Length: 98
Image (cartoon, rainbow, N blue to C red; front, side):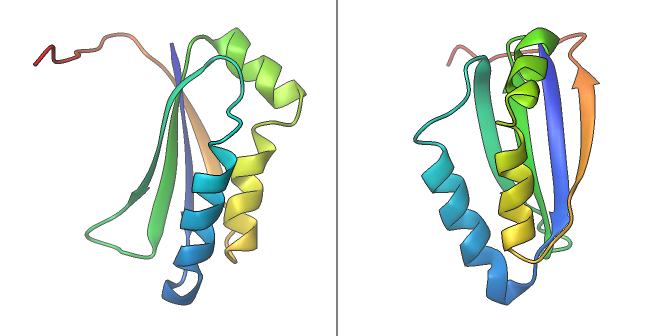
C-alpha cells in the first residue's frame, strides 16, 4: 500500500469549494484507490489535507501518469491554494474489526 497526503491552506470563504469538488470527484475515483479522506485541522482550520490510500505504488503511478491525481491538486488550486504532496510507503497497519 501507498499513502499520499496533499496539504494546502484554504481560506474560510473557499472551503466550500474544496468540499464540494471533493464530493463531486469521488463519483469517478481512479482504479487502485482504496480510500481517501478530506480532513481539516482542528488546530489550524485553514490547513486541509487529502489523504489517499492506494493499493500499490504502481496503482498510484498509473493514476498519476493518466493525470488522475492532478484532480486533487486542481481542487486546492480552485480553492485558492497551492498544495504540496507527500508520499509514504505503508510498513504496518491496524484495522479494527468492530
